[in-house]
Image (tube, rainbow, N blue to C red; front, side, top):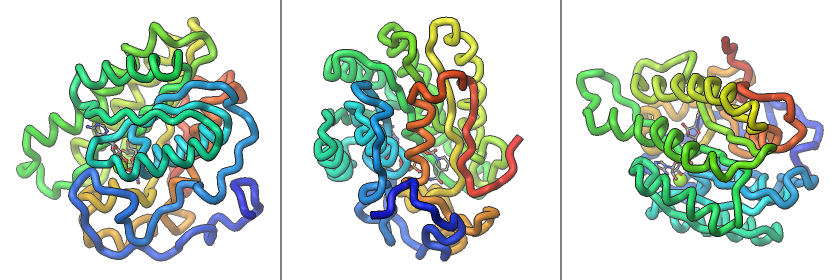
Length: 297
Ligand code: NAD
Ligand code: MG
C-alpha cells in the first residue's frame, strides 16, 4: 500500500481542483467535509521514531492536529487529544486509530481560550500519561471578515486567546514537567508573512506565534528543550469550511501555490514527527514551512 515514502509526483498526489462551496458553523467536523480530507489514516507508516514518548496535541480531532496525532501514535507515542466538546465524534475516531496503533489515547475536551481550562488540560495530560515530553499546539481560530469595521472585539479577543494566550498558558504550565529532550511544536501559517486582507486578526496571531516561539526557543535551549514551528500553507480542513475563507473562495482554494493544489493534512504529519523526534536534535527556533512552495522570509 502507498505510504508517505512512496515515490510520487507532488503536483498530482492529491486533488488538483479546488473544493465545492460549503459552510459549517465553527468549529465544524472533519466528518462533514466534502470531499473528506486525508489525515494519513490509510497511509502513515511509523518507524519507531517516538517510541514511548508522551504527547499532548491540541486541535487533535480534525485537520492538521488529527494528522499529527495519528503520526505520533504510529511512531510509538501515547497521545492526549484536546478539542472542543462539540467535536467529540471526530475525536473518538482519532482515539480509535491511536488504539489500533497499540498506543494510549486520552480524550481531553477543553476550551483552551479559557486560562483555567488551558492550564487544567496540561495537568490532565501529565496525570494521564505519567509525564509529558511533546507539546504540539495545533488548535486555532480563523474567521474571515472583509471589513475591519466588522471585526467585533469579541472575535478579536477570542482569536488572540485561542491562538496566542492558550500557547502561553499551556507552555508555561507544561514547562516544569518537560525533561531535556522534550519538544514544543507550535503551529503558525503562511499568513504570518503573506497576510490576506480579510484575516487581519488571525494573521497577526500567526506572526506572534512565530516570534514567541523564536524567543522561547533561545530561553529553553540551555535546558535541552526545543521549540519549533510548523507554518502550513492552504490545507483542506474544517477551519476553511467554517468561515476561515469566504465560501466563494473554496473553489480556488490552494490553486495559487506553485504546486497548484491545496495540501492534505496527511502531508503535515511527517513535519510534526520530524520536529518532535531526536532526529531534529540540532533544530530549535525554526519555522518549517509546508506550503506548496510559496516563498517565505
Ligand atoms: P481544524 O478546524 O481541523 O483544527 C482547528 C482545531 O482547533 C479544531 O479542531 C478545534 O478542536 C480547535 N480549537 C479551536 N478553538 C478552540 C478552543 N477554544 N479550545 C480548544 N480547541 C479549539 O483546522 P486546521 O486547519 O487543521 O487547523 C489547525 C491549525 O493549523 C490552526 O492553528 C490553524 O491556524 C493552522 N493552519 C491551518 C491552515 C489551513 O489551511 N488549514 C493553514 C495555516 C495554518
Ligand atoms: Mg475540529
